[in-house]
Length: 152
Image (cartoon, rainbow, N blue to C red; front, side, top):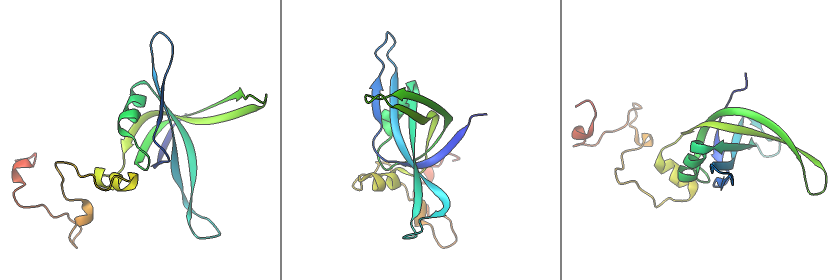
């Protein structure tokens, strides 16, 4: 079974291209920085990361183009695919990519905006963030929000 689940941050905005055949297909390439769990760099105690190339096709590529930005924390599922090609110097280059089958956001819009450099961004329906929880671990619900709750 070839199944991969990764969670990390985008190192740059996805690079989007469209195939040039009769039925144009979107192709997105991006790199995820994925922390190595439990490993620390021996020099300065910082956590190390792997930089994993990801490729998405069709609807997943269009999703990446529309919603994914540098610094966002996402989780992906997919499969590993290896390949090779000969570069301009005549040397054989081996590749390993994750072919993305699904994307998921791993943090709120506000947290993501802070990591992508859009700190002035606030959504129109801004709600309290979990970081505003009271000491018992529950989030404060503002007064007058009862009409918006789905179970009312």
